[in-house]
Length: 314
Ligand SMILES: Cc1cc2nc3c(=O)[nH]c(=O)nc-3n(C[C@H](O)[C@H](O)[C@H](O)COP(=O)(O)O)c2cc1C
Image 1 (tube, protein in one colour):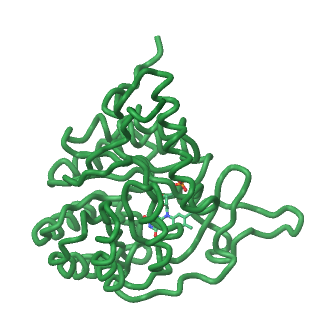
Image 2: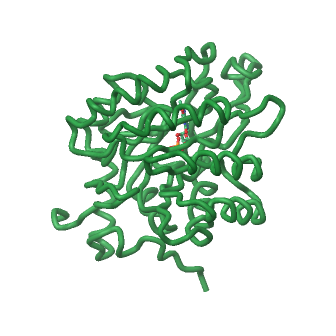
């Protein structure tokens, strides 16, 4: 019996009955989609990344699944920040926290949105997406450490809500250290690792074309392929960040063992992107049961029993 096993966790002072929920992006843009997450076994609801204005996004095909995951260049299609702020009132129908992802196209946009959200008491926290364009021709904010510092300075000067950041993947040890050095200067509630691995290229050899249309076929990679990178980012930030910062693992989770690995690396919660897109909201109950089965076999009854306890092989 796995009924005595708990997947409960806490993010930004909010209690989640389950540590599994959706990644921002897939199937979380409309009221119906957000409601479906609310009705599912997911431990929280996370919105699509919101911009200042409503956006249609890029032309299709803009999302394609492969045997190892997915490539996308969606172009941030979303209803605009006021829609996702208003949804927070409706989210109160579900007994789980509602987080809102914010992805302004400039620092000014981010600040305006965050200022506006201050009075929405049903928003459990903001996931500020640093994997988004800032100035044309410059790297995305998360790859520019000074720019990240500048943005967070402004954000924390005025936000009343709990703030976490969604980071792009890092690949070089000094980059982990530089980003952790910036984040440790602020009262960050959580850090979500990772956003898509940027600018991959997937080819259809039959037609000798790219599989997606925007950006000449370049797009963000998710799914199985990104799991080792996601685990490395969760692990590194778990060891480098202040211990009161919760790490949320995201990347390559499609079954209970993937979630187990993220938690072993230090994740307090685990998000599901590509797999949720493919399978829909029933994936949460399935992955939760698989995770509970693994915990039972290993003699663990809460995620605290193994969170962060990864050992180096001898
Ligand atoms: C179709 C699609 C749309 C996405 N849109 C967003 C987004 O709006 N904001 C964001 O932070 N991440 C976005 N992502 C990235 C995912 O949240 C996630 O970080 C990434 O896909 C890795 O997780 P996975 O391996 O479970 O897919 C998107 C991913 C996909 C597949």
